[in-house]
Image (cartoon, rainbow, N blue to C red):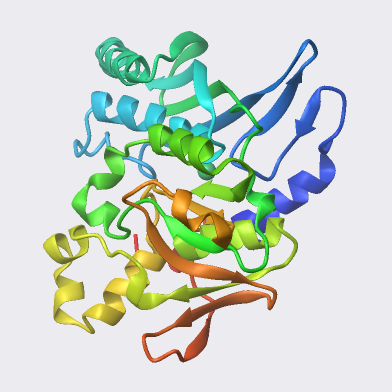
Length: 321
Ligand SMILES: [Mg+2]
């Protein structure tokens, strides 16, 4: 069975690509880009679907409709952050389970409204259905690209420094995956401080190793060295993952930091000449190389090829969930 990324590649090959009509960037980044005929700033469009039993556990009573609403809005906001954009309007479609549909709809809407209001986003439309299945929620979020243009996945260059915006790993066992904080403010700051020296960016939904590979592939088969001793490991891993504490320790924690999904931090590539313009609180984790592939470099300077990483919805075994 092909993996999720192969299926996306296939779909991408079947449908209209960038540069058609007002669509200046189609499938293959965190958002699509739509030109405004009378303005040189483009619209950003992103969409993300969350399923009960996969992205949250409401039927089993683990998560509330309010938690689901907050997460659904936040993960879409995170994709706008990945392009350094400003979110504007959300369109929410839900398939509500028959039992308790009214109460679920009420709690969901309250949470969606609250999360949207934090970022001045308007709930501008959607669709509501009731069915025998579990809750499914899809949000399409529209935003505006920043002055100077959206930050794409495809702009990384050899020699760029690779950064992440926060510590990684353990979002599932800790429940942190239900309350992501979209890094909109940081993305805006990065764009303002770095301008064209901010070469590429993505939000970390599938793990650093997998998501950095998207940047490498979109930027023309580049590679990266990741410095293991510089990768910030989330304390969630030590608080909740006894397996990590008991087993190989740092090695196992590093695997989680590289491969766990849903951290929703930003990963971005910066021209090394612009290092002094970076805001505080970001972590330098690697360097873009001409040689393709991902390598882990230890404190001893030894590099080893790294092939794991990236949560794939069609190949669940790749991740630790
Ligand atoms: Mg994304």
